Image (cartoon, rainbow, N blue to C red):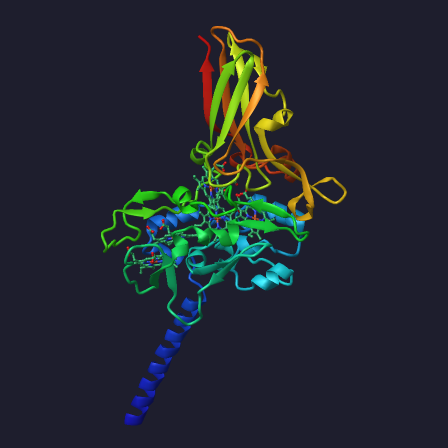
Length: 382
Ligand code: HEC
Ligand code: HEC
Ligand code: HEC
Ligand code: HEC
Ligand code: HEC
């Protein structure tokens, strides 16, 4: 009788232990972004609206279509677009295919992935994220809080790369294609990292976590707004106009910490016109902004047969119209002699995808194909 009671207790104990072990190992396996919602609710909601959450081929149509055009089987893009997946190597080789039931894959650039980057290894082809994630251990989330509080879900630790923006450079710095040609770059005019966090994670009032035991009055937002945001597009450049003796001078100042074109899908330009009696008497282009290359920012690649091509086959530029971080350029137009009542207007226009490419890829979603109207400047002749 006594014996069986012990056996029973032992059995319960074992059951409990194995339950504990299973939960620990599940826990150590992967903390998906939803698990953070319980405490970091505001940050979670911001994150789920961001392109980081939507970076995988399951949520970003443009990314999926380009990926299919590049390679049907291999998913080398996973390195940055689906970094939390367990079978990264197999996915890159193409021996395993993306699976939409796997939360590690639909999670995109996830909270726990980003917050466990301990170091970024710099290399010529592209940089590599070094992760601190270890199986069967309570995870450490790195950040930049002053005296972070303890939590039963994770420990918190400071790491300077969450302050000097190096943490962004594992994916955003630069990338060479298989031919050794650099197809994108988000570095500044000195080939260095700018203050990404300062511009892309502005502070908002409130605590970072719902109990806010430390009584913090602001937290770093996680929307990571960029070219998909009208407000951000309005901050991209500053335009200035000057008219003298039939010459119109347009100055374009890049206000960002990186070149105007960081990604080859984009098209950005300044449209300038002169209005007299509400009629347009002059404009810098009629149909296509490329009629005025100086005011257009675009990258077009060429392959080894000198034909226009997608980034993965590029060996050089067919067209390279760009402007480095914090730099400006002056464009001079010979225009008709202006008279009292004339108005000169210039406006920044930004396309997430060059309309030529969206037509080819049959992308029709309005948010993605519509123009975003940025900074505007005008002068009136008295
Ligand atoms: C080294 C990391 C890295 C790799 C590898 C990578 N990407 Fe990206 N990708 C990025 C980053 C960072 C951005 C955001 C860049 C920007 O907007 O300037 C991006 C943005 C994009 C976009 C724009 C999405 C949009 O919303 O408009 C497309 C399309 C894209 N990538 C396709 C691919 C494809 C296809 C592959 C694989 C063949 C790939 N990428 C591989 C880092 C990477
Ligand atoms: C049970 C509640 C809870 C959950 C769940 C939770 N956290 Fe936390 N987290 C906290 C607390 C409490 C702090 C400390 C806040 C403070 O000091 O203001 C914190 C702090 C942090 C910090 C700041 C670290 C630093 O040193 O600056 C990061 C990053 C973080 N958590 C990420 C995450 C991520 C990612 C998840 C989901 C995988 C998550 N947390 C889930 C409670 C939680
Ligand atoms: C694990 C890789 C990775 C890391 C680390 C990373 N990003 Fe990203 N980021 C991406 C990818 C991939 C995209 C493009 C997603 C897409 O459009 O499909 C992106 C998109 C963006 C965008 C563009 C949003 C838009 O509107 O197109 C911004 C801004 C951004 N990241 C800023 C940052 C900053 C700031 C950091 C550092 C705090 C950072 N990222 C760290 C991979 C990463
Ligand atoms: C001085 C402010 C500023 C700094 C510093 C800055 N950015 Fe930006 N960034 C912007 C603005 C404004 C936009 C939106 C306008 C646009 O995309 O044309 C933007 C756009 C982006 C985009 C989308 C660009 C595109 O065309 O696809 C990415 C990705 C990005 N930033 C990442 C970064 C990263 C990574 C860093 C740090 C290396 C950084 N930014 C530093 C202001 C800044
Ligand atoms: C692309 C990388 C990236 C992703 C994805 C990301 N974070 Fe962060 N997070 C950062 C960086 C960088 C900081 C430090 C910002 C600062 O100090 O200004 C930060 C700060 C924090 C902090 C501290 C708050 C503060 O005010 O500094 C918490 C908590 C946090 N993140 C939780 C999360 C959670 C939860 C998610 C997902 C819902 C998430 N993060 C997704 C990069 C990321």
